[in-house]
Image (tube, rainbow, N blue to C red; front, side, top):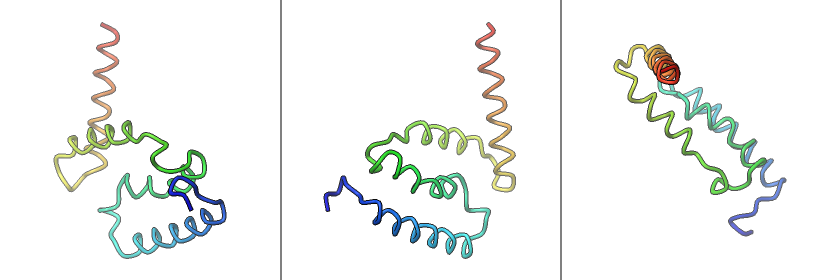
Length: 100
């Protein structure tokens, strides 16, 4: 099999194994260390079906957002709250800048 080709039957097997693996990770690791990456992993089989091999789609926008959110987190106690507040400030700043 070419590394750039994937049959749908193989994709079905991969998807089943993928979800079983994610379920085990969710069982064995606390929710506090699961984040956006774990969520994105749930969508990977859909993206593989839609766009083909991972080399066919660009993750730069997600990586840029991940970097922005990582810099926003100052305390490990309130991860989501810090990220949401930072994004809210970023949004307000961009609106003020656009308004002049």
